[in-house]
Length: 560
Image 1 (spheres, one colour):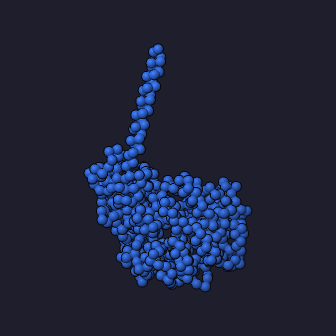
Image 2: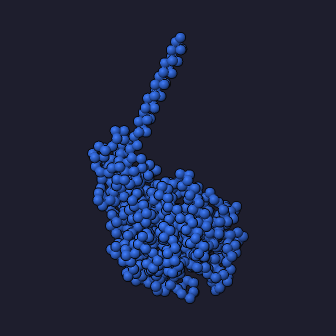
Image 3: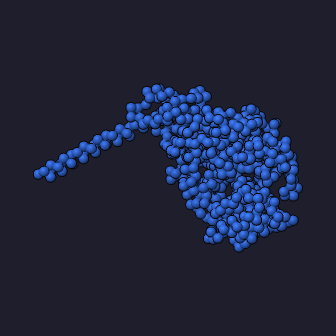
């Protein structure tokens, strides 16, 4: 009898506890609010720049203001998060990076870009070849083109000594040159008499290949190498395991992919990530316009890929193309000639991936579909021609941007505002800082070299500025970019302008400034909490700032 009573009592108690838990659970479900309070919130909203508290319901900001006001607005079951005086900013936008390329598992080894003797690369390449004996193409990263050009022996002879019997291709850190051995050149169909492709140079010494492919010549070969490896899961897995957590850790909640290789079906990998619910940032893809494709066919393909679902974290609504190359291999397009001649071509003022007329043609065909253009332009001629193309065939409805903008003629500064073209600058790399400008004197002459990435001049001319990383050419850490932007006298901007460049201005070029980019009622809850107040510390200490919490779409995706 005692056993029965105990059992009955246990069942009754157990049932009562379950009921209580259900009531508690239901109460928790009803409370869908979170109150972040005791903070220093910089909203990037000119009408209300500072606040103490934010009330979030599901994924939206329903109130922002003082602690007292927010507490009065909150439900009684609201979840409260005390931020203890920490600085809060909107989630960062990085509108020029290469996340899928960074996450790719195709690269087998990395060389030291600071190595000055090309002969010392041999042992590292041999070691990698032995370690990765089963891959069809041995892909490396990180050589210095200057080291190869300064080599006493032909660079092709050097790399052939390392690996003579299987294809090897090594990408320079900027991706604007490739170093190939003879087997790789053979498989790429490149011989001593092969003509230079559009936007590229096949380098030769006295008419014989030297293993260096410049700009698009190298890119064509690299795409062939990646295709031969045929690892469809490598880019997907790299995004999930490395890239997305890295973005969250750095407070980056919106990204423009600066080169989506649609012929390799990268856009399908992006779609799979979105469908599987893996994305922890908002992404706009910049479909790569291949310089060697026939325009009619390529334009038709690009039109078919347009996707702009307002409810999706993934949009395919940008076109990435290059107007020119880069400075240090003398392919950035200049109005004048370079002071040194690397290639012995009929002209020595840089090259065009896409000519002005061709850019204009693509804009005319694709802007009306809904595409915005993301145009690589480094040299002053490259910038000028890209602006001309937009002026000829674009409209102010387009949200086009020129990226890099390292050299801009005075006469072109005001055209950015007039044409509604955003200037997208990268200042995280040391080479963009004033103390290093002189390093291009031997190529450009001091007058042109000593005013690189003129963000102050652009801002004073009324241009909309964005700041981005070009990761992994440079660090994706936004605090490095912000510090450099405010300290790079004479081409510096204010702290508030630098923050705008990483937030609301980036939101504009991604066509989502009505949803994110600033913190105000009705917008989505994308924001970061920082360990330092970058408004009060020394400007030379900004880069030491760390993100201690990243909230994306109302959910915490990173906490230090």
